[in-house]
Amino acid sequence: MNIAYLLLGGNLGNRKQNLQKALLLIEKRAGGCTKKSMIYLTKAWGNELQPDFYNQAVCIETSLKPKELLACLLKIEEALGRQRNGDKWQARTIDIDILFYNDARIDDPELKIPHPFIQERRFVLLPMNEIAENFFHPVLKKSIQQLLNECKDPLEVEKL
Image (cartoon, rainbow, N blue to C red; front, side, top):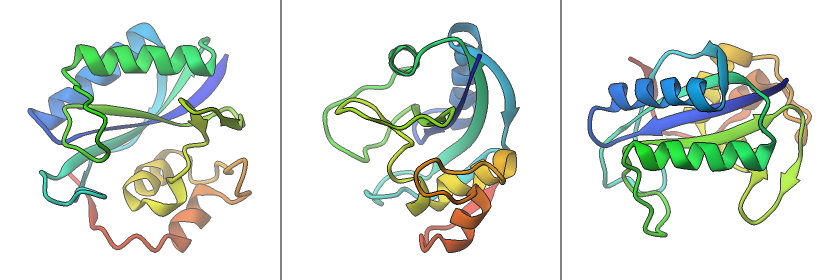
C-alpha cells in the first residue's frame, strides 16, 4: 500500500460540503483516509480578487500508482463541478493536489511530486503540519514543521 498526502481546497459553492464530498469520493475511488486536518480558511493565493478558500490536508492509503491517482483525482474534481479553462489560480469548486506520494520524486509535465510549491504556501503547510509535522520532504530534506517555521508566505490562514 502507498501513502499519499493530498490537499483539498475550494472557494466556490458550499466550500465545506465540497471538501466532504471530495473526501468521500477519494475514499470510494482512491483509498482510505488515515488522517485529516481541520479545515482552514485561506485568502486566495496568486489571484487575490476571488473568494477565500477552504483547505484541508488528508493522508490516504492507496493501491493506485501516481499517474492513476492523478487521473482518479481529476475525475473527482470534474464530478464535483471543477471546470478548467487553462488559467492559473482561478476560483473553483474543488481542487485536489497530490503533495507527496511515499518518498517519490516525479517531474513529468502533467505530474510533479512532491508538489513544487509546498514550502512557499502557508495554506499547505499549516494543515500538513497538523497531520504530519515530522514528515520529511524527500527533496528539501526538511520536516513539514521546519518548512512551516521557515515559510515567508504572509497570507493569513486560520482554522475554522
